[in-house]
Image 1 (cartoon, rainbow, N blue to C red):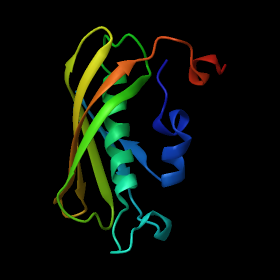
Image 2 (image 1 turned 30 degrees about the vertical axis):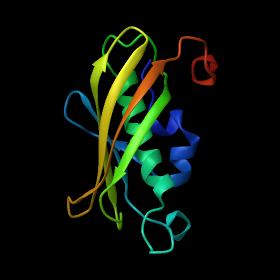
Image 3 (image 1 turned 90 degrees about the vertical axis):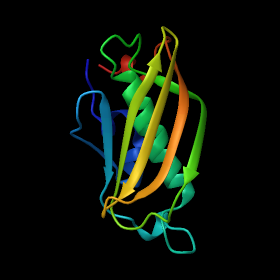
Image 4 (image 1 turned 60 degrees about the vertical axis):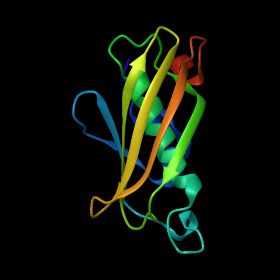
Length: 138
C-alpha cells in the first residue's frame, strides 16, 4: 500500500510541504511558501522547519526502499549543519546511505529556490514493525 506524504504526516500538511517527483532512490519534499509563522527573527526559515524537512525526507527515503520491512521508519538520531538562512521556496532531498533489517542510515539536504545549499543532515532510522494508525485505517 503506497500513501502520499500528506496522508502520512499531518505535521507536514501544517507546514505546507508536499512530496514531489524525484530520481530513483531519492525523496523530495517541496515547501513552496515560507509563511510568516515559519520564520525566525532574521527573517528566514526557523531551524525547526529545516530540521523537519530533513527528518521527513530521510524517514520517507528509508520507508520507500523496495525491500523495507515497514512503511514507517522512526528517528533514532539525527544531526544537521546549517550553511545559510533558508528563504523563499525550499526543496529537501533525502536518500539512503545504508540499510539493514532494522536500521537505516540516511542523508539529506535542503536547497533554496536558487539551488543554494541551506542545510545538510544525516540520521539513523529504525523500522517500526508494530501496527501504526496509518496501517489500521481502512
